Image (cartoon, rainbow, N blue to C red; front, side, top):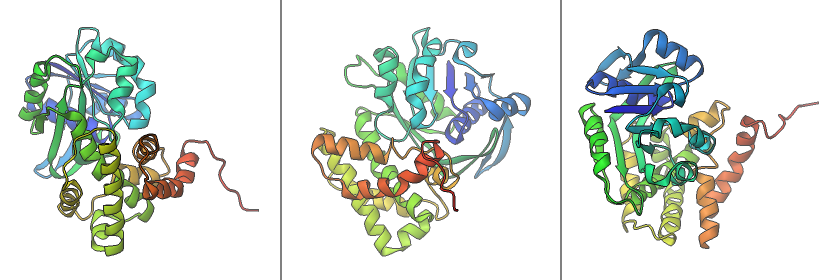
Length: 317
């Protein structure tokens, strides 16, 4: 099987390295900048709980045209990059392959399907604490990565995704084929939209957030807002989802932080408008009040606009 991973950030680099280490498939990594240069020069360096290793993907490419057609395409860029990237991915799907988005939020699959043949787009999410510590250098903590894939409504069968699930499983990924991948994406949004916003505002680790009663209550309130919006949009979400998600937070590494928190803290563009902003937009469209999300988006928006160059830096006189 020929598998492309688009994006050499924490998620993309990690999955490319794990798949390449497992062998048995042709692994194509699409990267750019220093990550592209370093991956070509020395391969991918991964630091995992069981140790460190360096591995070379089969192909490291700069563009989809250079990479060529693949049977499965894991799109692992940031959510805010998907809309602009999607039209360029057509060469990867020229042989009839399927694109699987792994972004946070609940809109990535629709954005891909708006620019690519909808029948060649599936749904997907990833659960992992991983990040790039430098170009083509990655660290992962906590449990093994979990990837959930599934067909979008109207797809005739999920059989085409089974080889991808098998390849990921053989690579040490907890891979699953979901019958309702949209619900799975919203379940993750309950965690990541809430925890990312609280982490970015407080600049605190997961351990500090859950150990502070008032902040933990804020986290629970944000989670309840996401559940309310999802249900208003017809997504089947369990009645105990908030409680189960809070329990999940309790089980994360105390030192862990969200990718959005790290991006905002470093002054980089983040997924604020794709995660928390989406809950605000979708909530308004569904007539569901989300005051906590609105407040935290307002608090973080100036930093986001500065990072995107849409707001002039404040200069003291």
